[in-house]
Amino acid sequence: MREYQVLALELAPVLRQAPPFIAQVHRLLGIVEVYSRDDLKAGALEFIPMERILKNALELEKASTASLGHQDYVVKALLAWFKNDFFQWVNKPECLLCHNTDQAKITSLGATKSSEEEHRRAQATTTEIYKCQQCHSTYRYPRNNDPLVVLEQHNGRCGEWCNGFMALLHAMEIPARYIWNAEDHVWCEYYSASQKRWIHLDSCENAFDEPLLYARGWGKKMSFVFAVSETLIVDVSAKYIDPEHQIPKQSKCDVRLLGKCVRMFNAGKWLAYNAKLTDLFLDYEEARLDEFYTKVLRPHYEEVAQLKGPSVATKTEELKPRETGAGEWTELRGESGK
Image 1 (cartoon, one colour):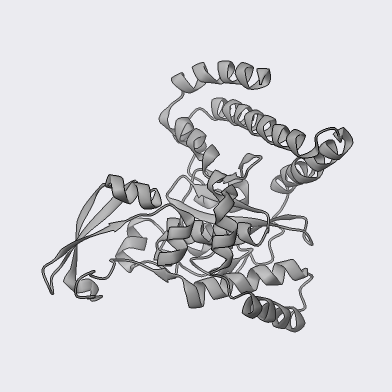
Image 2 (image 1 turned 45 degrees about the vertical axis):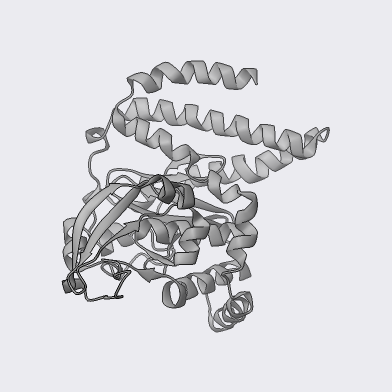
């Protein structure tokens, strides 16, 4: 407990003086906590057609010549099912009254703060308002954040797609982390036991191990990309942004101050995880240290070395423009590949 108090005392004045971007990065720390919720695993597993996923994984494995492990093919099968048969992209949601889906007959009226009921039900903080030109009704579309509600509705945009897929990975006990881009996109990664590295996944695009998809395929200019797990927050910008598409990092914040803050953030995460392991292993100190080294330190140091070297992704060429999202929307976001 004393370590937490000392760290909090050191961090508090830094955060009070930190610019908005560093405060925004700090808020990312708790984004993965929801996936440890007791009811989430059982609830999320109910959505997965497990027999189908495992059958498809075996078929992919038999047909492939890649040096991947069985876990990797399971993830590939899950990703393809999620994209092609389960989740749906939403530009303008269908009318709740007459079920009109004609995008030309639906008008966006902007967004507002979610109601108390919307927040209570699904942790929504923002709700979009639409008017149907067919039946003239006005209706609401909460941007839900509760993973089980997101899976139940199985539609949305980048945030919902990432949130839902993260929930499924955690439910299947596949190590996963949340990837946040400062220019408004999110996706996932999972830790491949066979490849001994974190592998890029974008459920919106059915993209597997294509980290340069956004820069070279979408033409997206980016400043920072952070990976967030239970034990670490890591700047993985070098993995996802090539020099041509790099927005100068210093345009967002003092890079040295950000680095100091991230080290302090990780110290807090490591203290919390170590406390969890202490409770789990009780008097087995050697087992606790081995678990901490195996699950936290070794993958982290391996990744630090990988980020300094050339890309080891299985696909770095012939990357496609964005598939999801209306054309005008993707152009406004700088993701149309132009």
